[in-house]
Length: 159
Image 1: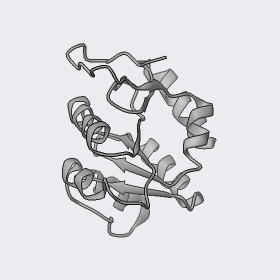
Image 2: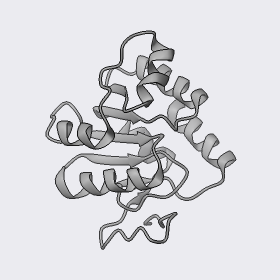
Image 3: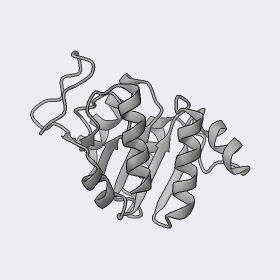
Image 4: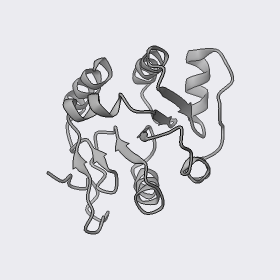
């Protein structure tokens, strides 16, 4: 089942995101993962992501743009990158160390452009972890309430 865009002006074309569920997320988390975390990430969620990344040897968590401040406060070390989202995406799109890209904590319009870039210029699997549907991603959570979204994220991270 494809995901509906949260913003009706976001026209994805014929290739649309499939809905992410716990089973698919568990399979994706077994691959080489990269989580790009922006400044709009809830601090509690950022902490959960950091703990999950420490447990999993196949996952890198990167604070992109101002998101590095959140990550630096959690890990007490300098972040890997401080560049903006689009510069980072163009840098890693051919990186063989990454199979799946999870994106969270950026404004809707920025994620839409980022997922469109990945869809058209990369073979990476892209996953939207925000509560607003992103039809340009490979997989996206459906539009949902904040309470349902937090429950789903907790389930995925425990996976």
